[in-house]
Image (tube, rainbow, N blue to C red; front, side, top):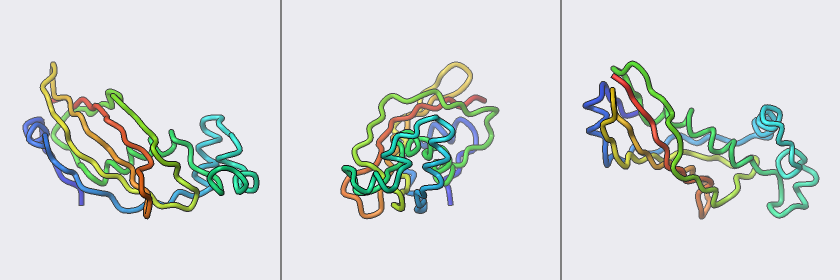
Length: 151
């Protein structure tokens, strides 16, 4: 069950809040192939299971940007925002991919609200997202995201 924030005041009160973790999501070859088709990135390490089996990771891996793109749907499991006119993905301050996600692995998202500050017409939130790999020693992705929320 996501944490709920209704309106800008409740969003501001979330500064310093650990949003918890989502459920696990399996990364399938079908998802990786669809991402490759959407982006035109068909590098063999992602799409050629036979060749990737002999590669550095022992099998195909998800694109780093696929992993990053999954932050959005997973984030919806952590925080539900209402009582605002619009939420805008304002950008990313930092993104790192410490560990690859092998096809067949499960990932989940952990979120933390670092800060919320006032901006013209609304508030801006800074969140740290960590994409964890089931059984992995390192995360797949660590990103600091910035969102704007307008009254």
